[in-house]
Image 1 (cartoon, rainbow, N blue to C red):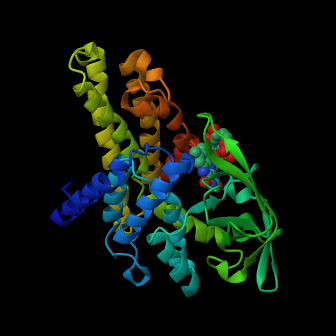
Image 2: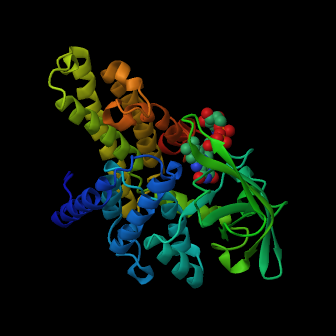
Length: 389
Ligand SMILES: Cc1cc2nc3c(=O)[nH]c(=O)nc-3n(C[C@H](O)[C@H](O)[C@H](O)COP(=O)(O)OP(=O)(O)OC[C@H]3O[C@@H](n4cnc5c(N)ncnc54)[C@H](O)[C@@H]3O)c2cc1C
């Protein structure tokens, strides 16, 4: 088994690292969920994104005909891994909606939205979850009906990350009241400036405004914005989600950043007793192994994806491993810092508060994109062949 990347992939990794160090690191914006940035930091983030848009790397694995670079899924994973490692902002929504657009979108919306996504001209948000439909996503109740050349939408979405910044939402809504769930849902793009949209900010456990509840009151959407066929939105949206799951480096890259950040901090503190503490050293050694395991699990998914092999259970294993590991790394980092680990948004906090931030910030990743319990269910059913409950 050969775990090496090709020389060309290694060279690409170095190019991405150089870009992140040159264009992102000097801006001094903390590595955090993009949706919580405000004012000056948000402006810097968008200026960086425009430069990133010029590289074409957002669509590194997407077809050249639509502005992509036509390279492999592994290139996309390398790009993600390094950008996230250096704390640079990646809009993951683009990686959910664009594959669906490319697979089943009309030529017009494909050209329009995939191009704008690659050039980073727009911010997306994702309108899937509802107050009564999260893990059980097919139970959504937001309604869409046809009216002439438009669709009309009524209902509500919740936990919508960065909706307060977004220009477009990719939205799932119920388009048939009688058909079985998976043939009763349509998927489309909505302009967030459409009349009839209102929003309530939701403040998370870290006291940040990251997500929102959105309300739709007779919002009109041009019928041409549909992604795939009417009533076939479930399948269209799942293609995108599957694609995103098949190339996700976000979670393990965060683990690597938190872990390496702590190592660098300890290096800078030669007199700290924890460097010689047997228990702490063993925990650090164990974390080094766990992070490496997580990287291998994640790249294995990408490799299976590239070979056209099933990767469903493997993607759940990788997600579960990395997101649960994030929490352990965050807690261990806090232990290593002692009381300094609890300093939050304080000038004396080591590593720019990333340790205390991560104590809160790593918990939601075990919920977003499918909870840990749901991942275990997928592994049991699809990986181990156990009967569905
Ligand atoms: C940081 C963050 C950002 C998010 N951003 C977005 C976004 O931009 N757009 C969007 O649409 N959604 C977003 N979400 C919502 C996310 O997709 C849902 O929170 C997630 O799918 C879980 O749904 P729920 O919150 O309704 O919980 P529920 O599904 O109600 O689950 C509650 C509990 O029950 C457990 N449970 C549920 N079903 C099962 C089962 N079958 N077996 C075992 N246990 C089960 C769950 O594991 C959980 O512990 C975000 C969430 C977070 C945390």
